[in-house]
Image 1: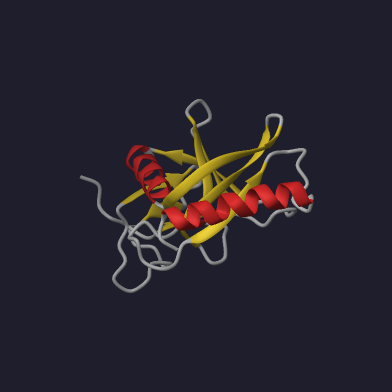
Image 2: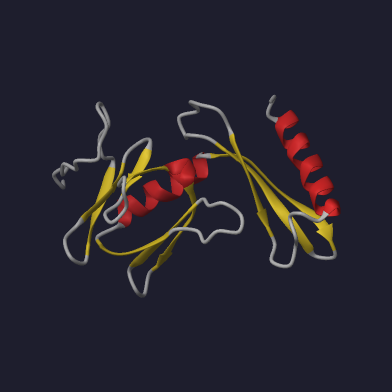
Length: 161
């Protein structure tokens, strides 16, 4: 059994559930509530703030993309990891658990938007709402606004908000 390492970014009562080292020996880990990664300030990234995480088995690289604001570049992290199996399972489970509702709504032709409601996997705190627009849609277009607003209202109603 691997010994659990310490990381300075853990909050009181928080403990690592899985971890791996980067190619340069830096620790990357995950707790019940957050992903802890080097090179980010703060190094603690709550699971619900991860838009996606992909694993490239050939390059042994974990690619993590943070939730962003429309029109701004999303923050990305690329980490080459050694022995990441348990950490990859935890990342997949926790990111998925943070999604309360996810819907795709068509605006015109094949273009649309994804409406996402996310919150901490433990179910604490309010739901944060996000809209991810397909390339080619203008979020300021009145037709897009109308369709997305209706989709957001329906999603909120479905989860009792």
